[in-house]
Image 1 (cartoon, rainbow, N blue to C red):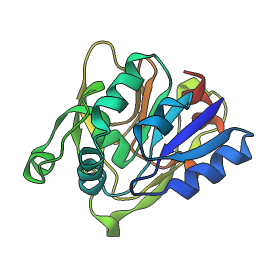
Image 2 (image 1 turned 180 degrees about the vertical axis):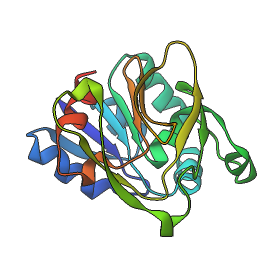
Image 3 (image 1 turned 135 degrees about the horizontal axis):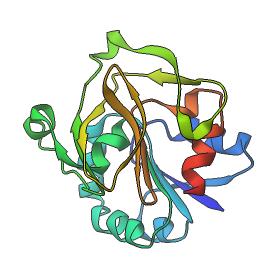
Length: 190
C-alpha cells in the first residue's frame, strides 16, 4: 500500500514517520497526479483555514472527492477532521472554510479550546480492543453530531473524537504523535 500525505500545510513529516514505523510506504502529495497515484490519502493536522484555502488554490477539492468515491482509505486528523465534515460551526463559517463534505457530520472546530488547552489523555477506543489509546489533542476539533451511516469510534467528554463513514476515517487527535500504531493501521485497513 502506498499512502499519500497531503502536503499543502501541516504535520506531513510526522505522518510519514509514523507510517514508516508500521512499514507502510508514504509520499507527500500536493497535486492531482500524485493523489491519483496513491492507495490511501491522509489530510494531516495543521491549520484548517490555511489547508482549506490551499486545497482550493491548487484545485484539489474535486480530486479528493473523486478519491473518496473510489472507496480508497481517506483519513483526516485534527484539521483534516474539520475539512472532511459536511457542516461546520460558526468559526468554520466565519473563516469561510470550504469543507469537503465527505463524512456526514457537523464539526466544532475548536471543541477543546485554544492551543493553550492542548492535552494528552488515554481513551478507550473499542475497535482497537486492549489498552486505552494515547490521544494527543492540539487545539482539537470534535463532531457535534453525525449521520446514521457514520460509525462513532470514540468519544471524550461527550464529544465525538473519532469516527468513520465507509472508508473515510477521522480523528480529532493526532495518532501520528501517539507512538501507538493501532488506530492508524485500523483506519488504513478500512
